[in-house]
Length: 609
Ligand SMILES: Cc1cc2nc3c(=O)[nH]c(=O)nc-3n(C[C@H](O)[C@H](O)[C@H](O)COP(=O)(O)O)c2cc1C
Image (cartoon, rainbow, N blue to C red; front, side):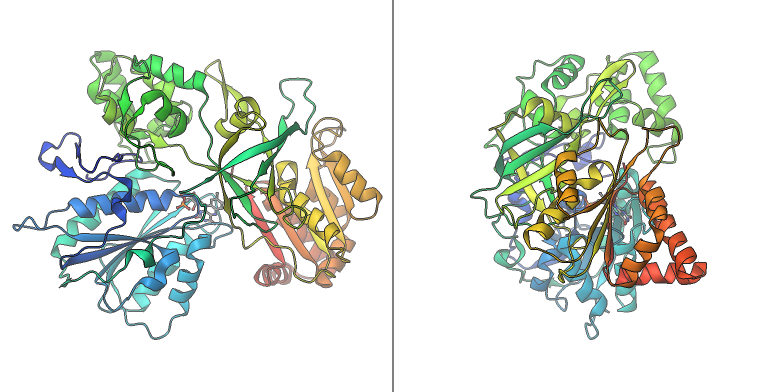
């Protein structure tokens, strides 16, 4: 396996570094590890391979970069010649001349409610709409990233795969569908691609792709975040016991960034790990933290100019919560202790894939520090150990303020996560970073993540129905502010839910003020203030007549928050309302709601927690 796990290769500013492929000294080689090695213009004719990615949260890009490295280091039989991979974001698809391409390796995720990543939408629409593009000369394979908890699992990759076949392109290896970044599936697909690539008859030609056309613009974005100052931080909840919710409101200053956003968009935030947790990891590693290491490939800009100390690398770039199964494999291999080895072998007996329940239930209930402690007699070389850690990802928060009121301020609503594992208190990374460590007037890296499927109606006369319990309220704060500021004449109906009126009624004052002055019709379900639990869907059922009347009169309906339970229960309530109040049978109710969705009048911003 050339490409192993999240973080399997490592980069930095040195032009050349020695990358060791563990356990396979034959493949050791000198390759360029600088982060900008992905932007290449080959000056000599060669056999080109197009590696294209479409990503919302960065995972597909990470996979595509590793795939690029693996293709770059593949030796063609006998001659020792190399292939010439090029990495292109689907956003830049119009720079590609498809008649010139021989091989397409497409890595693409599914986002939102089964739609392509925002930047890949144009490519997707073009691909599915294109009538007259000749693809019969193209060899391709698709790696579809997704999460089977969502109803439209890997839909984008699946449709593109089918479309390419319909356009008579030849499948190199069958598409693989990746469930929640299962690296064993990713690795198998990459291995299969690498196996067949040398046998494909790729024409040798001069690279025509210009770097200007394929590199993304210079604006601030996920790979080049803006350092935004946190101007305000306040608690939205009252905590009397440890069980009580802790939710905060933060405001970031975007002045000078040139970043623009629309109500419905999200703010991406790069967090930092808790230094105390990093110290625990260093202790388990028997490291001081001053060891100098090469920063990983996924560092955001500006990149460190050379090596950085281990402590900084762990604070900024590595995920210490989610354990990569490759870490267990590495530690098992390097332990000097027989009991640790036997325990590792027990965990690994059925392989690394998600079907190994013993291993995955262990990984789900342990963090990096726990695994290091369990295998405390294992001392693999540090760079190998780091290569088996996952990258610390940015987190996304729906923006809770309207740019119409203030285009340079982005507010967010965050529920602070604290829990206990193996008797030790633990904490979520980003929310405790914001609450406990990032001080007001200090800054952190941010960017805007567009959400074009979650938008106010352009016609201000239309009513809107918003359903957002808990932190699902966030985008609706932006919506309501904007509707008030633009004197929208349509009704604004909000269904909010929380546990207790006096504890976690988020934005209580603002919402009640709007309700009092007639800007908002507010319905709140306090689930635990009485014996019988009440949720937003119960309030919807109570207002059945009014809900249906609004929907029949052109209202837009929005759901934000938990996808697994809440969005499902709300959908069921809406179906029942259509049947009971609208005199529809179940099929008619289903079609009615589906048509609302297709008309962009039933929009969801939901996530699986
Ligand atoms: C808000 C949200 C919506 C998602 N919707 C879907 C979906 O409809 N279908 C699916 O298969 N996966 C869905 N996913 C899972 C992503 O596709 C998966 O996390 C993937 O690894 C992300 O890859 P990326 O970082 O390249 O975008 C969703 C994830 C999020 C956070």
